[in-house]
Image 1 (cartoon, one colour):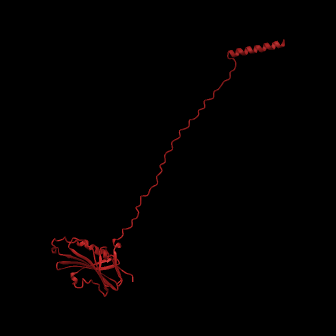
Image 2: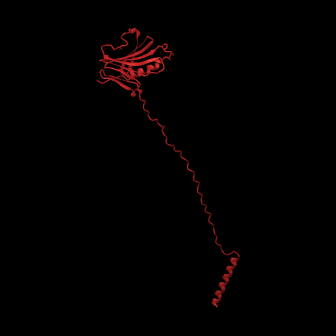
Length: 227
């Protein structure tokens, strides 16, 4: 009898529960949904600001040092006088026609086709006795000469110039005199020309300035030899 009562009570409870569930009387669990998790989008990465890198400065090309051109006289022939202790150089194409202890003659090349007959250098050396004159100067009065001074460091030359004519020929000469304690040397340059009227067909006159350029170049090569 007791078991039947318990069963009835249990059945009654089930009916009541069923009714409450039917009519929403049972407590319902409140489900609280969590707020959506917002994943922050990664902030855009700023592009790196390009850095201007200065390119290395390239030094301007340095021109290679060009040695100064050699003097043309370095390739010339050498006249040397051991008796009086000096030397000089003379250009190719010249001829040494006289070579004595105290004098020499060099026939120099010149432009052909003009009235110039010959061009030469006479070299004279003697003991210095207080004055140094070219043999070409000795017979002429001082007032007839044009005298100048030429300095070719460390030497000083006295330069005399003169022109004279004879029998249809003309001689224009320049004498360069230099001396030291013992020796006098003169370099006498001569331009021998002919009167154009002496030729059936008169040739053009020679260019005196052109022909005389070589004189100074030869003088500049003069040196005293070491004792």
